[in-house]
Every structure is written in structure tokens, then in C-alpha cells.
Image 1 (spheres, rainbow over the protein chains, first blue to last red):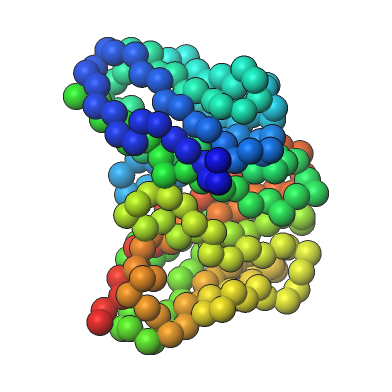
Image 2 (cartoon, rainbow over the protein chains, first blue to last red):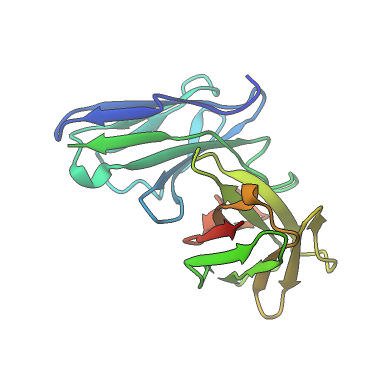
Length: 117
Length: 115
């Protein structure tokens, strides 16, 4: 597509449930990033993919969070046993390259707002 | 670790006037990018302007310009002739230009434009 697409736009779930958030990056972009943005804060890095592999997952807060990108395009962020503190907007971004030599610019989707009751 | 600090949680400006948003950052690297992103209520981050650290000349994009002071690690955004559509959250961000590193964001400044 023309831009980064994220689904669902909004998700309300109950504490303890499992949630999947999907990101479809710009066609041809090899690098894909997930960020979490809590209310009134800047985005915080979660995980970064270069192709199919997670190049840096140092931002994942705990083992309830997991992300995959099996074919090097669409990515899914998975959250198990959701907690109220997981409520936030989850932003996905992509770029042509994650390494040096590119413009450095990330292109963002509109995010998925997760509310855990 | 790199950090980005935006010391102004909120700013306001009269329509058609000029406003400057502040940003400082901390890094031991010499090769990096700096960005200003705008986030309207739609939530989508929109790139406003980008600066490569190796360039001494300040970046300019129409009504938006930056004052990049590398030695002071300062990167402020100036918005001239402010318009109602400029009202949004503005985030300053840093990215190391080496290896696979993510963007590091500040906490943002909420800009209001008064008609």
C-alpha cells in the first residue's frame, strides 16, 4: 500500500486476554519497528526487524510481549495475559533500511489503541 | 544510551506569529540524524524536518527551520507564520547513523495555535 497500515485501529480487551496487533509496512521497506506510546508520553521503542529476523528486541518490557515477521513484510505484535498497564497506542513504522546509508527516516502508521479493562 | 529532552510540555502561539520549540540530546556519537515529527490527533507521526549531524547548514522546509548547535547538542524547531493546522504534538527524535538503531524520542511539546 501507499503507507504503513495498522489493524485494528482500536482494541478493547479484558485483563488476562491475548491480543494481536498487525502492521503492514510500505512495500519494499526492509526495516520494521514497533513502538508503544502511553498517554502524554513520547513513543518508546519495543522491537526492530530487519527482514524476517528481530535485530533488536531490547525494548520489549517482558516475556508477555512477542513479535513476528515471518515473510519479511507484515508483522504481528502479540501480547499474552494482558494487564491494565499495557493500555497504550502501539505504533508501527517502516524504513527502506535499518542500517547506515539511508535517509534515516521512519514512516509511521496511525497506531492501534489498546485498552485493557 | 542516547536521550532526548524536550523541556516545554506545552507552548502556544498566535496565528501568523513565530514560535520556537526546544530540544536537547545526549550522545557520544558524531554521526547521527535528528528529526522533528508532528503528531496530530489522528495519531500518525508526520516528519516535519530532518538534519544530518555532519551538515553544518541548518535544515529548512518552507515555514519550518531548525537551529542545530552540535557542540551544545541542541536542536530547536522554529515555526514561522503559524497556522491553525500546526496545532499538534511535536516530538524531537535522534537516530544513530550506524548499525541497526531505532529512533529515540523526547516526551513531546503540545503546540496550541490561537486564532
